[in-house]
Image 1 (spheres, rainbow, N blue to C red):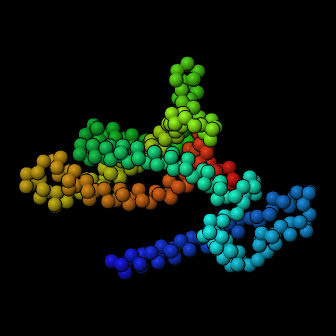
Image 2 (cartoon, rainbow, N blue to C red; image 1 turned 135 degrees about the horizontal axis):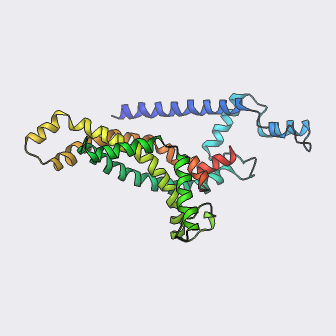
Image 3 (cartoon, rainbow, N blue to C red; image 1 turned 180 degrees about the horizontal axis):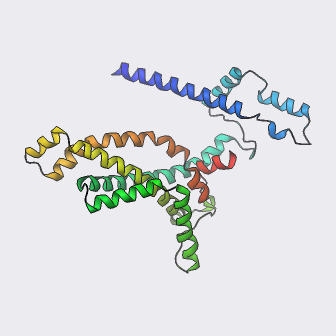
Length: 279
């Protein structure tokens, strides 16, 4: 077992190293980092060359990569050209809000997807199954910006015009110290993400459960006289959950990076909006 874990760990480190090399090369090949200063009348060619030397951009790419990797491993990601703030500080400010948004949405999504997937699988081809399947396909095919803008129009704009209690968007969350106010800001982006993610997850759960329910050991459990509820929850669901857990594990980077479109539409100051503002 230790040999297997060691081999997988080495493969993971090697894969991560290859990814960093590719990302670094693509970033360097995309454009000159100092191209924005080419038309600046206050900066001469000598000034640009001095800045290039100070940033180490005149060195060979392998040397630049090794220096960048060494500093990144120490948590030193440099300073932003736009805000003049350390990148690590900007990430530390935005990441907690992204985790609040994404983890909340993920927990609700998992609970809903498991419930809907189980109901849809147990009642296969019934009216309930057809409704859940249809809603899943509709939700899966809708773009996130359409759902986000629709929810904002109804619950933030129209409700306010009608004199009804409405949900806020675009306010300064940094200054919000009231937990209830933070929750009110959280509702619309969370609902948007839940509607999109639940659609796909529910289909995965339904398919996995249907595959497991057709296996021999499930038929044996039924033949021994176990109730359908016991067969489902004690035997089928355990194995059916394995592919679903794998998919959830693959979504961990998505939780850390944030939802770019959702955070931008609702002005949620997380990692997704940070990427959008400084891309």
